Length: 253
Image (cartoon, rainbow, N blue to C red; front, side, top):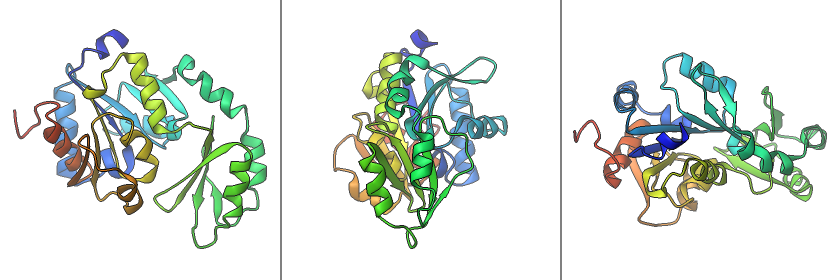
């Protein structure tokens, strides 16, 4: 698939919640049907905080399958096999695994009694993620984790992620693009929360869809390759594809 993928006219690298799963039912169906009808020229990469199990259940339920998955806030880089398994691409994950260095138990112990943080019921590989209550949270917890050599990412004012240093959605997307020999001009990055910032500033055409959280919009620079859409979720993605003239959209065929 790698050689074929480099020949795709356009690749959508999209966040899920609030972005690819956002918008009206009609807007979602328009985008999803358009992707399925244009598989020969359109590639699909999920770039999400979600884990492979969630993505498998999602796609089994009718959402288009991607060809590649960047999951777990950038700490998983995987391909989707012909039998619909999400299989990690180990050479692309080697540096991530080395930076994490099996730190899960140490991070869990350090945050065991941290107020405002509730460990999410997920099987973590190279990250730890918590539900975040900003009213109860003690900033000392963040300083403690950063002193241990890890990055902390707070997004949507409700998620607290502990990540290997320098690892997030943007760097992992660029790593996958290099592996697939994709031109930056052919990839649209789409997101709506602060954990999407690193991929929206990675140098590809990018869109913050309508309804994006204010901290993301405030952090985004003003640049020709970064578009702020008015359409919510999937409508904003289609709006951006047309804005950048990346591929004929349903309205322009």
